[in-house]
Image 1 (cartoon, rainbow, N blue to C red):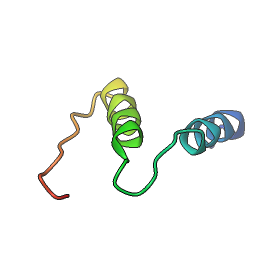
Image 2: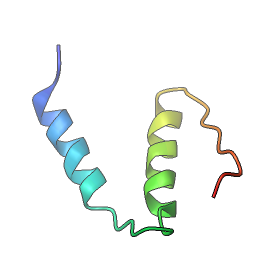
Image 3: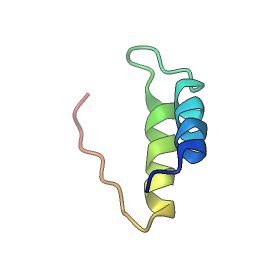
Length: 48
């Protein structure tokens, strides 16, 4: 079952991160950290 409160909290966290074009590092780091918390090892390629 979906936890609506957690979903809303996660959404608010994501949209609160400043991530203009070519400045997505903060968003990338946030998502990578969330994946690590879930036991998933994120991989970044060299695509610009």
